[in-house]
Length: 340
Image 1 (cartoon, rainbow, N blue to C red):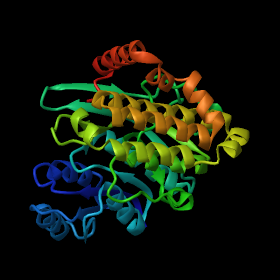
Image 2: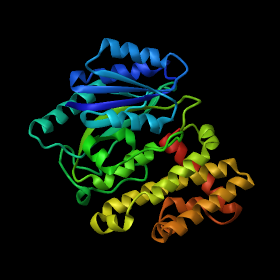
Image 3: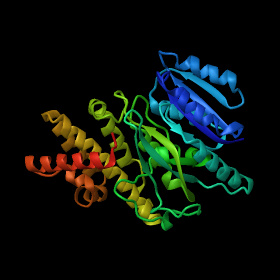
Image 4: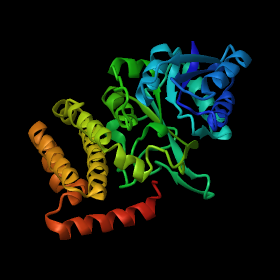
């Protein structure tokens, strides 16, 4: 068994995939790298095969028909042989020194036969073209290098979420959770990062700036204009998060986890509503109303929290003045957190 499986979903990634894969190779032969060529029409498949030929003990390639990012993650997880599993997008990369320290920790837990269910590391928003970065850490939420559980975590700041880029899961936990991402849908990393959390019994925070999350491509899914064009997919993922958990059961067993999951749904609702407001036409405003009504009919407890006790409520203020206040707040948050 390998220590960790890295899955790299690729679609027309010839311009940047080498930076990603080269960074993963620094983990050595204890790692498995599964490159998923998701129906690319450029040289992605050829480049992937070259890596497989050069590193047959580490790299394997899956060539498949296009199914989207989630389909690529699913394909990697199905084939994963590593004790741990991490998704690395083809335009992102891992820091070499941080990876060295993380691999040593994973190996130590394996040697004493005491793996943790989830490892949390820092990530860095890397505006490569602008030459600026913004680090996102979790020192206030977790005690460093300490095995813990949901009852012992601290408070998340408004900008802090356990996004896919920060997480390494034990592969068995992912498979137990039966997480499977919808095909031909963007923004499914939110499902991947949240669906397994109720199956996580132990976790460790490593204060390492491991993941570099590249921002700046015009065709990137988090680009504001792109997100507006794909708003129906964002809404779909938001709905899947609303319906994806036994919130009543989680509330009884892990109330801190329940609060965290509702926070995450709140930010997804906010993103959906903000971009519907940016579109601004009558159809978009109706979609915003229907989305809120969906939440209300699905789970009134979640609805009341989102509507009256979280940031998402500020995206559904009454009247045109309410809309103006919402967009002003969005502009401030965008400049502060540099999220696209």
